[in-house]
Image (cartoon, rainbow, N blue to C red; front, side, top):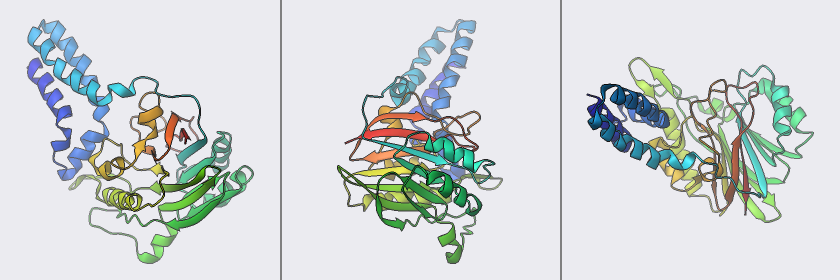
Length: 313
């Protein structure tokens, strides 16, 4: 039985992309895929207790698969240098201290600071506090970008997201106020950089629909299409994507952009929930620039941790 369980664990991780996404099962497995490695020591303990050589040998499959998937994330991949520091943070609609959050983010030293889930009530606070450090900023609905460098060509990006399994999307008039993505050009001394800030729809659990991801997935596909059509060579995407990059929903984005955390981080860089992070759903993705370092900042009043990265030309 232990040997069979070990083989099934290895096959589950090896063939995760073939798991049906009915009821969101595939996305759910892929969201927490790194944590399946915790079953290995449990099965190993059972195998040693039972003195089962077959179970120990069978465990080689899940160990090999897990290391192939995530072994490269275990070490420190950072390098010295960096021409531009960027930070992304879902500040949380229920944040009890937006002023404190803004001060902490300004103290990070970021050149670009992307905020998601900005409420109308807190917007003035963020503008007042961050305006002391950042000369330029733009806000579109619930997302915004504060910058030390000039911004131009800002426009909202339509990432239509439904908020229920029946497709009860917001009416057109409300979409403008609750826009969840923008695109702008940051002017640097080395040329322009196209910057996207996005907050994809939440995933929900419904009794009849299971792990519901349809709204988020539509947003991911729309965002991938916008990036695919982006003419600028240098692109930085900052935001809360409400999913890990192992999730099949982000294949369109990961085919065109690479993760700063995967390229230059130390460990997995989990960002949510802030109290006990188990997944990295806040992402910094790039094209045309080289990540040199990626890290997670200390908690603020939000239920997400801020994520940061340094990139070079």
